[in-house]
Length: 126
Image (cartoon, rainbow, N blue to C red; front, side):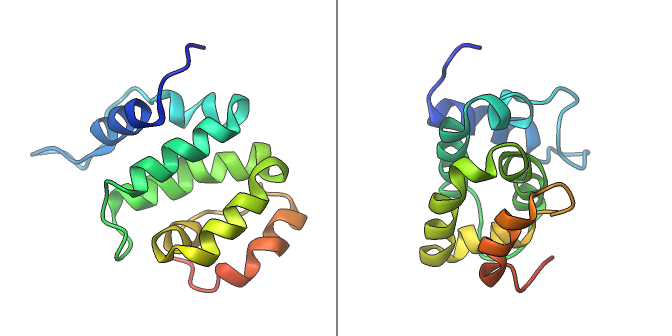
């Protein structure tokens, strides 16, 4: 897999998942952030997620936030939660937008110890 910058990954992901006129949003093909990146490059994945958060509305649940929560962040916590949980904990503590994103994650595949560590931030699921 070629390595791209978090900024380039964010731009591609937002373009693929942004609603366009006459559609509900989301193109047919997924981005690398929706597939291999959460499994193979957790740090780059988290950096790209943060880059996306800096570019989208994080004031309330919305389409892009939902896709980001139930896609890349959920996959990252599922496959590499042990690797990123300390940083995710810190981000959730400091950033209300990240905390909102974390509340949109579906937790059925995430290890119980990861969920337990992040439970204090996940009190408002949407």
